Image (cartoon, rainbow, N blue to C red; front, side, top):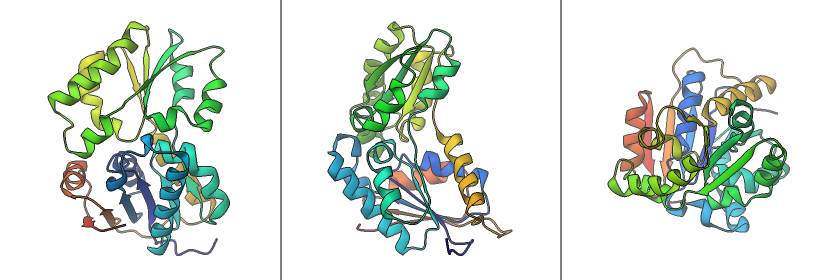
Length: 266
């Protein structure tokens, strides 16, 4: 594939949650430039139809390619599980997807009961069913739809009383099922780990896919010979089609420099 090695890694999500993936990538690959699309005006994807999700995933991909992305990270569980196969067929750039880390959880569980907190779009997808069916013989998977969580995060209400009550209503039933691993099946949810930890305590292992996605991104860049040759710190451009204040706060708190946030219509 023809590409300038110093062109950016493209990343998109239904909103600001995929910045949890972006942060892992930026920390692992500090010399890479990135472009991040936050399609917050259409969040959450998890409540949309498969056709709508595919349309939005293509739209985001087209915009990232217009801005020169050499690889695209679909930093959204719902978009990955519903659209990644089609994206890989229709575009020539490499794609990195993300799906709930239920396989690692099935290996680490001692009680053989794992919980997964995810969106409806992820839990009802063919890819999730395929992945989960391969481990259900040995491991019991307790699924909970995190309805409303993404909207609260997008509204900047991460530490709100409303968020705490909603999380308690989802997590208490999982605790009664004797889970010892909780899989976060949405890239927004890592921002809730402090609140989740207060509810579930220290005996439950909380698992998300961020580090694994960053490592896979590096491996695919290496395989395609498009790792950056730069020795300077990468630049990170963020675009959002809604009020940018929540995104700016998350970026500021990431501790990563050279970040620029623009509000666009897309």
